[in-house]
Amino acid sequence: MFVILKQRAKSREYRSERSSAGRVEPSVHEWKGMASLSYPPMPPILSLVVIFILVYLIDTSNACGMQLCYDRWRTAASAADNGLIKPPNGEIPACVAHRTHLVCLIAEEQNCRTNLQYQMTKRGIIHKMKNDKCYAVGDVFNASAVMDKGIIIRPNNLICTFRSKYDKTPIKYQHCGLFGDPHLRTFKDEFQTCKVEGAWSLVQNKYIMIMVTNNPVKDHGAATATSKLTVVIKKNEDCASHDFVTYRARTNYLPGTFENGRSDVGPDKSVAIQVMEPGKHVEIYLRFIDTTIRVRQIGRYFTFAIKMPQEIVEQSLGDDTQQLCVQGCPEQEQINYKKYLAEKRKIMDLNQGDIAMTSERASELCRQSQVVDFYFDSCVFDLMTTGDENFTIAAHQLLEDLTELSPDIVKTQENRTYLNYEEIHPSSGCRLKSNFIPWTCALAVLLCFLFDQRNS
Image 1 (tube, helix red, strand yellow):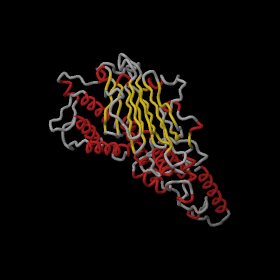
Image 2: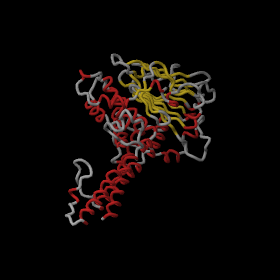
Image 3: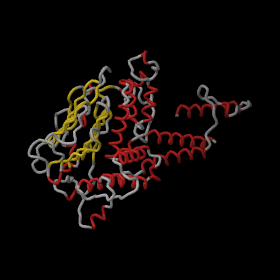
Image 4: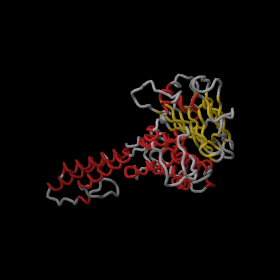
């Protein structure tokens, strides 16, 4: 941009010198500051319009409030789990929670219509309602009406409910996710693609230990994916169990209970597992540390997502164990997926290289699965290295899970659905922040406008 401005200034000086010598000054349309580039100055009014549009898009993206709807769903789901919801038309109680979430989102549609994550969340709820055979029209949950009858449903009134040491401030949560070949989002919101074959720890603290085992994807070189996941709730006689409680999932086996055969332990079901979709999706909730764990089986492999209070995460920092969610993958286990995508992007014939799918075809499939940013890049990477289209579903579901667990995550995303080769060039290791590009464009346009005004 500054090179262009400098060239334009030199061009004006050159025309001024020619004019003073009695020569005919060339038209501004004849100026060529760069090869094959010719255009008049941008009209000031157009500059202002462009700036307004960019700022409007940023504001509408950040103004979409999905957290309220998620909180209403969580409250309704808690009431359903405690037997406080009894639909009169034969529906399961979860239908009321789903419908409560959907009605709230529809009410926010004016603010959220252009938000991709909003659309994904809404479609996800509609899909759940269809699977659970819920009615589109029916009861929604009214927390105040239930409380007026003297029934307390707030989780913080139950025994063994997590209470932050910062009583006067909202609880801050952190998230971690693992999916695909495998791709990792750490608690620090760092994005990595790793090899990590064998058994690895995801999270370990005095309350819980989570382990995964990654095995090679058959006939696809160095690609690995998660084939086993183990969750161990440690001894806690007050709020869990006098002994360890273990949940173990492996390929083609996603149980709906812990290994002791129970679906809950502790006072007021302070640790509980809920089957969201038999054989495909379970959710474990530990109320005494307010932690939610989601496990899905897609094809032969698993995805993992966790939401945990920041102060619980910080208790893991002093542990010497390599925890993928905390420290990330060891440097020697990381794969430069940006370099891979940049190097393989021009291969159009599968016989010409070691790819299972072309970049063009993989990008098309990943756009259809409605994934964005890192999840889009990871989806393309997995398809090119394995050719297994189940990985597109894995990327979509993991992004959906993290969005539902924390709708505020959408504020950090660019919603990019294409491979940015400038960003993923082998020499580039940085990740641009979500609003960096729009604001840079707006600033550049403003500078052009001011420069034209000064020299007009």
